[in-house]
Image 1: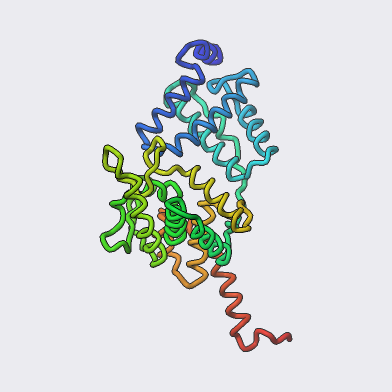
Image 2: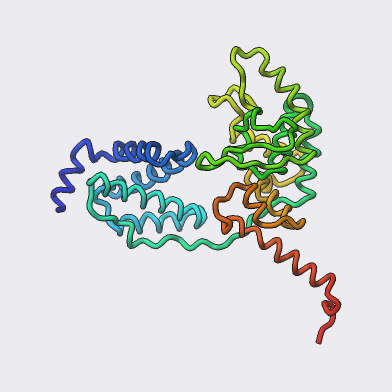
Amino acid sequence: MRSDLVRKISSAEANSDNNLTLFIEMMLAERGASANTIDAYRRDIEQYLQYLKRAGVDGIIAESTHVRDFVIKLSESDITARTQARKLSAIRQFHRFLILEKLRDDDPTTKIDSPRLGRSLPKVPGFLEVDALMVEASQVEGWRGARLTALIEILYATGLRVSELVSLRLSSLSRDGRVVTVRGKGGKERLVPLGEAARIAIQNWLPFREKLVQDTTKPEPWLFPSRAAGGHLTRDAFAKQLDKLAVSAGIDPLRITPHLLRHAFATHLLANGADLRSVQKMLGHADISTTQIYTHVLDERLKSLVQDVHPLAGIRI
């Protein structure tokens, strides 16, 4: 058995880079994984294969001890337990792929425990911080200010994932501008209502958008078109703009990211009485258990309610 595996390693078919390429092609063809998911898998597995290479082995003959040592190295770094778990998940799927391709007949990851994930609560910006951010965005002149304001207002009004936000199409907006159709993970569509502030921000942005695209030779479908390869504003570009805006507003930029504003949307809705199922639908969560991380807000709200309203709250017996 071992000699057979060694012979496989010496063949071009067993080359690590080639196997990774085949694995990525499988993810694209059979699972329809998104570009972001593919990039994450590629980075995680490349890191793992580089570690194995330094250890003098290959993914085909790697043993449980190699996988365990890699996980230990991850735990000794600064990355979170959640990131460690994601990397291990990618490695598990890669080894299952090798088994399906008959490049090996055992899975060295079966004896490896995943890192324990704490039920950490998202550290969301507060109402005043979000308001200060929007005020600062309104001070930015010209089309950049109009676009930035529209982006932030839509994000805070809908809780979209940043990839969903920047790739919104103009046709995603309903005729009356009160609803936006969002294509989320797995190509699933959902309808999300837009508040008045978001609608006004979009209306202020559209004239600037028309001027920006009027010289193009083909129709621009995107709500936020740009010269980037995808034709629309990129996630990184928006994140960098938020960083600068937070600094200008006197807010720690680590507290203002697209994902934290998505958290703020859900947290602030629940704090003001929204029901969990509605928030789940707007966030595009397939399972309500994913949304339940925000229920700590309801717990705090209930504690405050009892403390402020219950007639015996202030009595000590």
